[in-house]
Image (cartoon, rainbow, N blue to C red; front, top):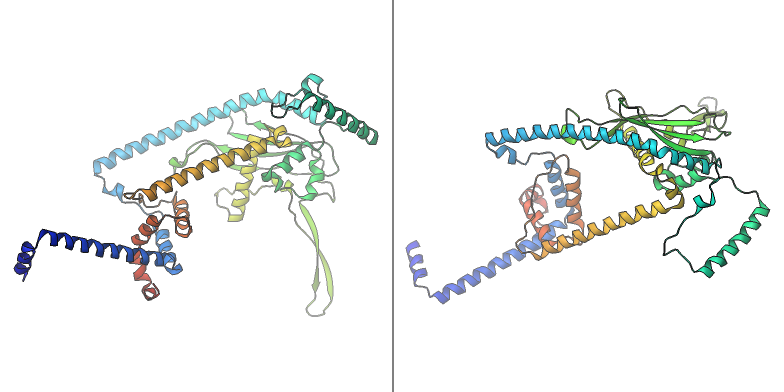
Length: 437
């Protein structure tokens, strides 16, 4: 029979052969269309999507197999490269130590300017007319006539205010305004904190001395007030700039290892970090009711000076870890942004700059993603690179996968590729759902 078939095929006209090929191509096209429809139906089935996600989760942390496939002599050389990388990490640590020393050096140069800022804010020094001159941007400049008109109005308003009340001293509520203008800090503020922060006169950053372990201290200077007797509240952050021996490749600059606050000497009845609540309790046997007074923690900015302690073992519960992580972020932000640029956060200019930078980055990222997606969809030979997830990028990969599956803008070729990759295993797991598909 096979010989007969071969003979018939040999005797077949070339034109007939072309017709056969065309029929085969049409059948293949129909198969692909059916596969696409099946794939789309599968991707809309929540059970199958859950199975695919579970399979992805199971790949987290699993090796790609590429290193294992390398010859032994190549693996040996890769180990040599890793040892070189560890040495690079130690050199980088030294680099950051020297950066810290530079910070100490220039902090001393900045301090006289910050001290003068503090004197102006708390009315210890009145700036001269020359020091108060500020040239506006060209966009903000007005015509001469308009300027004169506004000056006249301002003069009249100032005279009225002078008659109504005394001239304010310094810049009232300077630091409170800064805190309220910054989302990261305003979220910490409670209404009962504001009267206290009106007495805040200055915030200073002090770096550890040369030769001492890396650290910095935030000093909050208050004028005498009716809430506590302290004139300075402190928060010290201990830092480390050396690779972890157990994981040297994770080193990415100095990290905060812990922090210590200070004790606040509250005036009796003025402690805003505590509140008193009253509860009624009914006796089970007698049926009598009594009122119990209890003191419990209260939300307040001043809890910032009582951070959770880091145990020697380093293990903490999730809530404490979250509080400590937020604390580190706030301390770093105050040191890096608030103290050096306080006046710009007071006026709101620094906030506008931060928002502009963020929007521009976001728009650029969106544009790049759009271009990449367009290239992928237009390229018939495009095949996305497939790599096994590792523990360091698992969350990102899984999140990206979820977005790809659920987004209405996801590219169809990528959906098909993802579905086909786990099609067999999903059908095995969800055999009863075949009829629904």
